[in-house]
Length: 182
Image 1 (cartoon, rainbow, N blue to C red):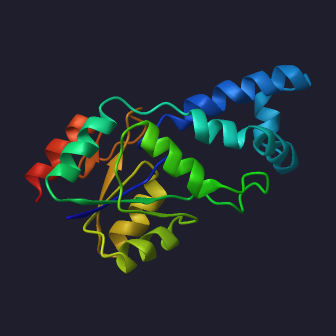
Image 2 (tube, rainbow, N blue to C red):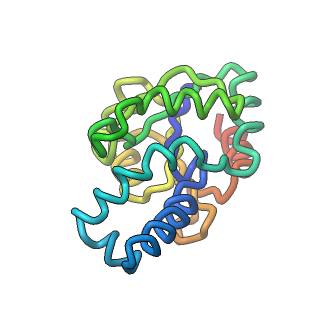
């Protein structure tokens, strides 16, 4: 099976590290974090300083590495399909290197990385790579992917959404879901 997996808030805890760095930046700049995130110029300034740190130091989600190893050992191909892009913030020029280094540090073996994919683009990437199942934390991406005829699981460990089908809240649930739906 070819499995596509989003990175941020699916494999790793991106929201948490962004919040941490944003709070530090806001204190340093004597600003409100909400004001920063609601102003494109301020938000861009924040990310231009912190994005490489965020991508390099984000924590892996519980059981993600172990589950991915077991999926890989059963012959599955793993592709990272992410919205991360070298164009998002001009200061991050080595996006692929950061991803590959982070994956290696967490002992995760993958078959490929596709960046700059969001919404319909992510669905198109899934088709192009013959992805059998996509795992993503974003309901917009989820809708676009299933609308294109590709199976998708919404990964939501914060229980923000009310989806009942094709929904998991942790990596062990995801592993069981994949075993049941082979």
